[in-house]
Every structure is written in C-alpha cells, then in structure tokens.
Image (cartoon, rainbow, N blue to C red; front, side):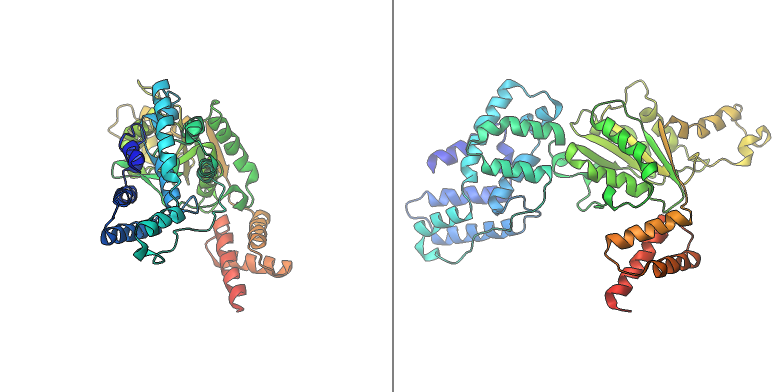
Length: 428
C-alpha cells in the first residue's frame, strides 16, 4: 500500500487522471487502510461518500463504477500525451512516461468494488455487510469509447497499451472531443451537447439520391482527401438538418464531430476556427437555416472559411449549412436600381451578396416531395415503427392529413405517422 500511494503521488503525464473527488476519496481511503488500526468512523464516512459519488457517475463504460471512472478520466484528460497523440506529435520521452504512469494506474484499476470491500472488512470487521458492490450491467454499446475501455479492462499490462491509446487520441481527439460528438458554440466557447439528436442515416426515408453526394464528400473529408463546403437548399421539412445530424452520428466513431454555430454568432467564427484548428478530429461546422436580410453583414464572416484570407482555413473543418433560400441573402428590387441606393458601386455590392452561395463547392437541392415521394416517406416511417394499417387506409389518411395541414413535406409525413402511432397505441 505504501508503495502504491507513493507511486500515485509521482504520476507525471497522467497525474490529472486522479484529480477528481472520486479519486481523491479512494486514495484517502487507501491512506486510512494502511494504518494498523484504521478509525472505523473515518473509513465509514469516506467509503460511504465514495459509494454515493460513484453511484452518480453518468453513462458508465465498464460494469465496475470505480474502474469505469478511472478509465473515463484517462480518456478525457488533456495532457502532453493525449494532445501530442491527437496531433501526431508524441515525443518518445512523453510516450515512455505515459507507459510508466499507465502501469501505476493499472494497479489502482485492480481495486474493484469487491476487492476494496474485502480490504475494508478485513481492516474493520464491524463494517462487514453494510455496503454492496457498485456494479452496473455490462453496456451493450459499441462506440469507440466503450471498445477501448473494454480493451484496457482486459489488458494486464497497461504500459503495453500506450500505442493503443495513442491511436485512439489520434482518431477521436482528447478531452471534450474524445468524450462528446456534438457541440454548440455559445457565449464565446465550445459547449458539449449532452444528448444529441440520435438520428441515423438508416432512419431517413427517401431523398437518398440527394444525400449521396454529401455522404461521399464527408467520407473524402474523413480520409484526408479534398472535400467541399456544402449548402443544402430546400423548403422546411425536407430533411436537410436531419441529414447533417445523421452524418455526424454515422461517422462519429471515425473521428467526425459536429459544432453548431447560430447565425448570430457568426461574427465569432475566427475564434471558433482557432479553437478547432490543429485538433485531431474532423469537424462539421453546422449552420442551420442560414439566411441574411439585406442589411445584415454577418455573411462576410463566412468568407475566411469558404475562400480563405491571409491565414489559411483549418483543413480539419468543413462548413455544412442549410437554407430555405437558394441565394441565402435576400435581394430587393431596390438593389437592382442604382437610383435607390447611396452605394456608388451598387452592382458590385449586389454581386458580392448573391455570390455567397456560389462559394460553397457542393450545393444540394432538397425539393418539396411530390405525392409519390410523400407516400413513400409515410410508408417507410410506418414500417419502421411497426404500425400495421392497411395500405389503402394509410394512403387515404396520409393524403387527407396533407390537405388539412401545412403542405406536403417530410415533416408533415412524420407528424402524420406520430399521430397514427399514438392512435394505434391507445386503440382510438
């Protein structure tokens, strides 16, 4: 015990892995247990608090709560090893020190709930049988994070796993980027989205032909090949935003991350790009419902990303925007008439505005569905949800819903199927 506690104090590269209330309580408990006659009151208080802290851990990646916490801390910490691996610049000295630190942490990992409870009960028999082990069912998730956690749990020598972790950080990123796949830029900084929309490409019905170029573009981007910024144009409810979010989910384990930026925050785009520049993952910068009134000038902020400026745009960032307007910026008739403007070079100004959409290398149109496509979407959604309704009845009711509601679209189809599912579930 003395040696283990001393080694944890000497952690170098991975020392912040133990900088958490949970880890501090566990180390404090070990410090109490090394005494020949540990104080039962102190042991009970510290372990009771530790149990509660571990019970509150969100989304465990391993069945044992302490082991899950420790591995999560290793995966989420930003340090010389993880950041160097993310950039592909790990120095030999840092890599070797990481090996040594990992071997120390592996010894702490061995202290699962049953082992630690046995130590407590042996040292303080009066505390026998007052706690149960902090275990959870084995997670069925197959994310990259869960996969590497299982590999670490199965490895006896964590020092030999340094290259495994190096590859993980290189592909998925360190810190926030390793533990989250979706972000928003809010109040001047990047904020993780704790529960991102889980939509997947397999959930989307119809518009396969419209989506295919964007899928290929994204795959090129992830492979380090030339890839375009993309503009998805179409009326509301045609699945533009869902397509972008589904792509981010589909390729999250390949290192793709999505960062949503609101139109009103586009003036902060240089700070966003600087935050993402040089990081390991690939980022879709997502601007939903992009459009500008004629007096708004935030569109100028997009030029540095779309065309570059004195500083080259980050190669790991691509902009995917959706818009209900083909030209993005509203054009008025006064823009076409020199007599109504104080701008000496009014035609140049108008062309600057109208050329913004042309700066996107990939422009995709999502048309309003005709009746055939609308019914295809309805049928596909009903089938996915296991709703059993005669085909003629489904068709008749879907068309009636279309006439009574806000026009034909993928959103209208989904709203109809939502209503139908509620009816069939309640029997009304």
